[in-house]
Image 1 (cartoon, rainbow, N blue to C red):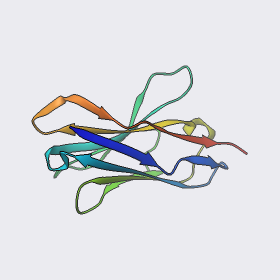
Image 2: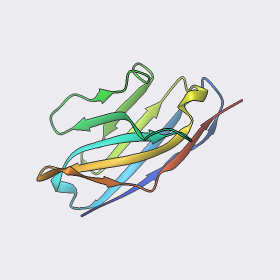
Image 3: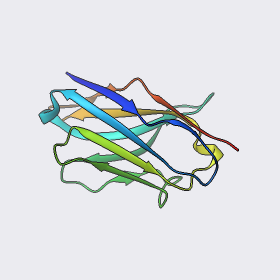
Image 4: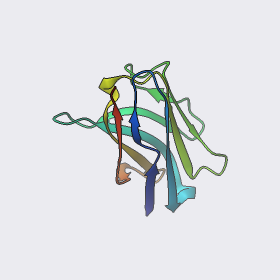
Length: 118
């Protein structure tokens, strides 16, 4: 079992920056992948960025060059640095984790709202 708690969302003007954090607890040593998804009103949840143990981060084309995903050395916190934010980045952002022994099961956080507006 893994429990995820996000923080860091809020209201920011276009061109601004935000940093999201997601702290994992529970079976953190079994986590293989951690990532961020987002869901805008009326749209499906979509992948933003994901990082796996020993792998290169993977980003949605829409955020490449603007967002950076990282994990702390202990492996139980994942961050999403978001720069040059655009109104179309407005969404609820969800932290996601997958375990090595069951990569088909998704653990989700409660979500944090990011609003980009002037």
